[in-house]
Image 1 (cartoon, rainbow, N blue to C red):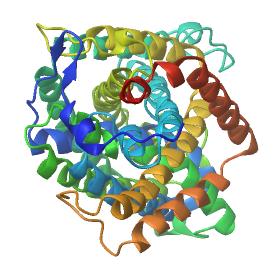
Image 2 (tube, one colour):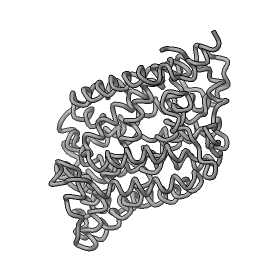
Image 3 (cartoon, rainbow, N blue to C red):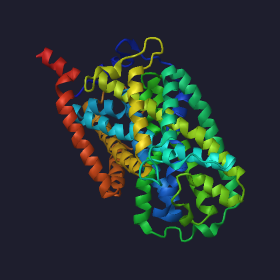
Image 4 (tube, rainbow, N blue to C red):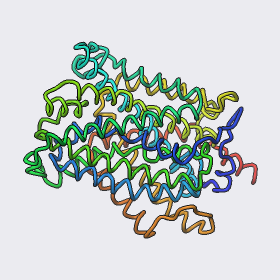
Length: 468
């Protein structure tokens, strides 16, 4: 169970799949914007309205708390991405350091981080689409097909399913095409958020910031655990390790640059939002920023612009995170832990086409049928666990393989990765009991799947058997 895969073997297999190879086409700029695209928008466009009631104006600090937690893990990700530049992300890092069963659990949790977060963001995309249609045409998609079951008369969320399908079609065209589309959408997203800040600060009222932390440290921490969902995605560059032109140099830089960009934008937008209107009024809306602009200006057009920008920009999150999920499953399939269909590469497009279609179908169904809140919390706990594993992996690999070439070294080692583990555990503790129950059950199901399928079909296990 605890057999480890040599890092040299992991790196040597990079890019190779069944029937073809992945194409190395992504530059540093594209990798950075890929991570920004996977991250920026998730928390601000979707989660802010849910986190503010927990912390009040101190939600600004909650974003910083989540950012510090993400930073410790980002530094560990940067070191391992520069050392083991492959598509598997934290799954592959765990395989090289902590053993196969830990790598499996980590990969299983990444299903929560990637596939489930795509579904959650798709739900938020549908809310902004409805806001835009209502503001511009005074017409909304009927609740029965615009909301998931149990949410204001919803039966199935058709818009959420549609955006997943559109992203899938783009991914099937090729990595270069997807990266170009994402670059355009990221610039649009940043422009829309800067537009929000400019308009919102014209109506800024410092009285709305007092009392700053009405629910105390407990509320601030609870909000921090929830908004950590908004930082999921900075590690997206690490899933492109086998399609980057210069992975050892570019992956660490892309991870750290994207986290810095996202944090600055989040804090600015959160400050503008809570300064415009009383924090109590920010709750209960998944399209909270559009509501802020409408209330601040008394006009519909600024909110319409924001909603239109969000409709396009949040689609980039769906695109890039969906991409990351398929590449992680690609690596797991190549190791024999899941069926071979996930590692098959289209010779013409040089992408894992069958993998992309299967994952997208699962995500689309999830997005159409499950409410946002449940998805976001489940995603956060799975991600925090995976981040903790990455921090432990840095410590283990420094001890077991000090000879490996490292393009980036985590500063203040071992303090930084240890703090990364502690911060992750702290935020996990602040998640609800129901979320923990889901996480434990998810892990148990994953272990059953591993022992039923992957344990004996593992390529490493077969190699070891032949070797003896």
